[in-house]
Image (cartoon, rainbow, N blue to C red; front, side, top):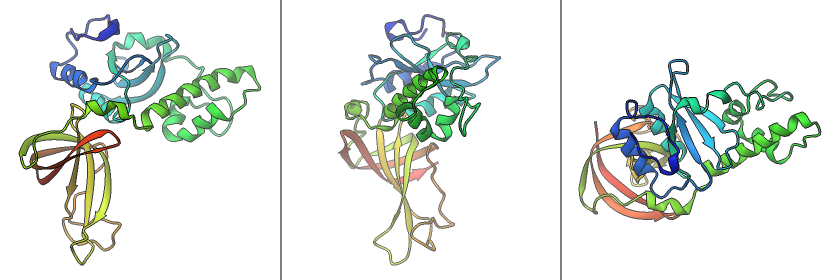
Length: 276
């Protein structure tokens, strides 16, 4: 059975959680805290065959459903790692029975406005600024709307936790390898991609500057060189493969070019990349 602090999981997970995922979770949670609650992946069931993402608060109030993640646990965990990359709050797993009674809760259904009859979680996914407006600007003159405002404030907290970088999770990321060393067989999940023009060439050779993270939370910076000349500085060559946020890059080998810190987070810069 997976060991989890503070008794957050009192149910049996022995048959359902692979050892490698337990290891990923343990590594990812280093430097994170459950002082203000946790984020949780709810386990799939035959009746609900997907893994979902929740925010559980320390006051035992109603947990907040945020979004579905995936149909497989491995993909769900990887996506949760990306969402929580800049957050210092722990990620845990719980049996779906813990959340079952909350699925039918209708307190988060908006009874007015352009998103009438939609749930707050759905609105937050497509238009987070509207939920922030509900939390901070909307005046609940009708008592029926007070629960909506209260839930919107919880989503506002989630938005802050997931989008504002936290300097004090720097310990989660460590420098990998030594400068000049070649590392092999790395699976890196892309956090972000930026197009950059190669200044040493006369035409538009557009590279892709990539920030990525491994399963232990270590951060990497790398540049995927242009496959050919582009028509403009804002587009890739037809010979370049577009790197997308959230995809996993399978790197066969790469050279450690340097180590650096940015906003308290440690990064390893890679070069001479060879992909599978």
